[in-house]
Length: 253
Length: 257
Image 1: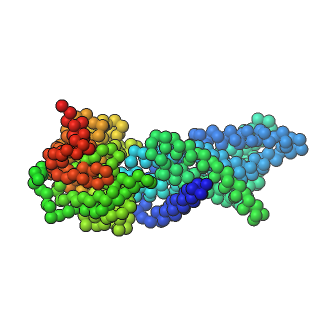
Image 2: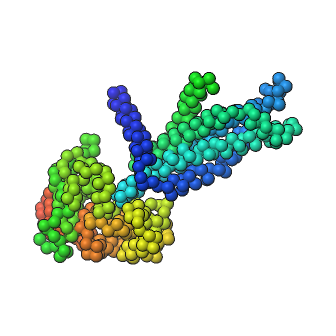
Image 3: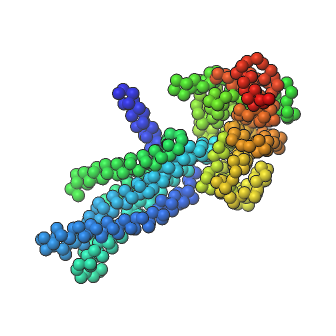
């Protein structure tokens, strides 16, 4: 029991050091711009097909499921306002983060872990390259930048899905749909969405890099790292969602 | 003591390991190790698997920290200097890994460029290309420039791994099991390459191995790690001229009649 608590505290201390090192390496030159751009491409651009499909389905299905409830009150005309608030405030950041946890988190976890197993990280270190800056800082930055961009994209594609769901039942022009959508959204909604997306992006990058960088040696370690990256990222995303909602409601939002 | 190379300077000690201890949990691996590497010398470290040979060279390049003792490399105590100073010192120490440790997402050209562009930022593209081609030519693999590491054989990967360390023109080379898992002919080629590197680039080396043919061919001096200490030291013949069963078994297996 005492040993477990000690190990847990040691793990927290290591996570803290890993986090502090990120901020230290982030601000000190040299900067690995090329690698950051490459990671943005790997993490962001290559996720577009999956994110597009998921975002569209979420918007379409959510609208379809919300219709019967509003129909009871004869309030189907409120559907654009309802889905815009739901997508921007909660669904887009959450869906993007969950999809990215699975796709990007497992990719980073497995890649870093296998580099660890095959001593590629040690090889970087002994050749005078800072592997933390090259591998970790670039990936965490890339997820923190690309997941907010993907979130905006999911919002858009989700609204398109919602619009297509509405016009499968009612006559509604795209102009009046988007007029209602933008009428319902406030600046604070967009700011809250960006904050959520940045927090989720940072968490996914940080956790995936941490488990990959410190994975145990051997092929089993690679599998475990990929798995832990996904599970821990998803768990923390939900935990952060609750915290952010509580903090925002504290400010009467 | 007969030595292979004539360029060894016994007044210039490039690595000085004094009373080094290292353990992992309850397992004591190194128990008071002392070792010197002289300028221009090829020193072979022999020992069974798991006796701490690789740990020793990881301590030299500070991939691991010793529990006790001091390690001086090119006049600097590696555990007393800052990480920034260590990074500069590492540029003078080449490390050839057992499994080559090539970056598998990059071509051979990118693998070789990697340490160069990060440590010599003022080089032009033309100069980088020239350096890459020179070292790859030195290991006889110029034709693999645009191939991926997965397309190379084990021996070729080892050679590229050595070329990648040579590109920074280090003063010291650390070879971790350079012939492990290779066929005898490729082993011979790698051994020749190690000797060639010593002569051509004027490099002092520590070669970790349990391959006696390799030890005999490349070693100016051989030390044997037994029970966490260097108990035997000398030329190949001197090392095995003993009745110690731990040493005799090693010899008998490699040169079985």
